[in-house]
Image 1 (tube, rainbow, N blue to C red):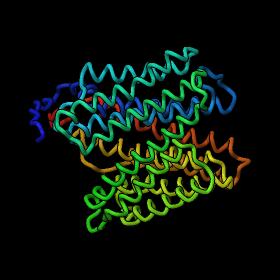
Image 2 (image 1 turned 180 degrees about the vertical axis):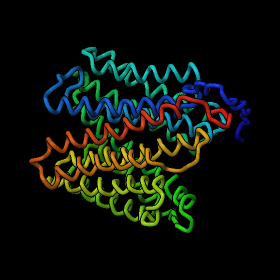
Image 3 (image 1 turned 45 degrees about the vertical axis):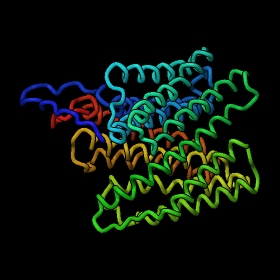
Image 4 (image 1 turned 180 degrees about the horizontal axis):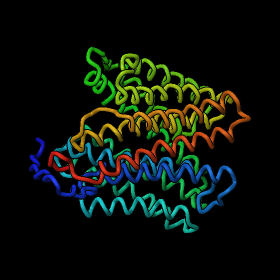
Length: 397
């Protein structure tokens, strides 16, 4: 049973809004993630252009590490700490405990830019494990077994990140990219689970008569194939088996998406942005199969997942949940629409241009980076007042 949380008195006219950044997990971590997305991609573009030197993690490995364990991890933890309170009816970290988690994340981001590899490894890898504990405690108290797997996924991400560092430090005789591949598969599974939970519901709530449906057997098949792909990467399988698995996953996720009636959502940006993001998942799996056949570069498959599915789902959920949890109408205005378009265009440029015109890769990276940074930078600028101030209705959170 959910706990009852007292209503706080709303701010009186003329009073400055109360500072509320540390009242719930989504507030600091959405701001940290969007700020970091703006800055880190710009730094990567400078690295790619040869204008910025390398530190402890080198070039593309730093870029991949920070996209997954910096940007995506912050969003995931912020979302789970917020949703976990609703799912369990138990408090999740706020105040000083939430500050400590944010500081741990921020320290990890700084350390990977320094020569101090061991410090970076320990601090950065500790963050997902600390978040797993922070989420696991309320789940355990509420016996919320349905969502225990999120705790396990955070722990697995922590181990994957540690393997990246241990490989870079020469402790383990495995390439750092092995841990990146596992983390990509875990993020794919998280996107598939959360997409299945929220997209049909948001579609039917936001688009009257849409008729989005979930077919239980297809749901299990799509998620099962996603987990099978994770297992294949853990076992380092290649060749025809990986191609078949990726193609089957592509077909299952495409069928799943079509049952959600995406073509009926075009009038509601808060909904179609999530459909557009999810559409990148079957694209990613198709490109992954083609990459396994050496028909396309592996990087385009990776960016279909990260820039396309992950970037689109993140900006869609960061706007929607921020509006909802701060007591504002669930309606996309010019700010939200601009963010959606910029992030979506970044994915199209980063994936489409190298596929159609490989010689323009350099230009595609620069343009896509600029679009991505502008999209998340605009979110940071416009949502800072929303995320840092108390709800106008006086409710906590």
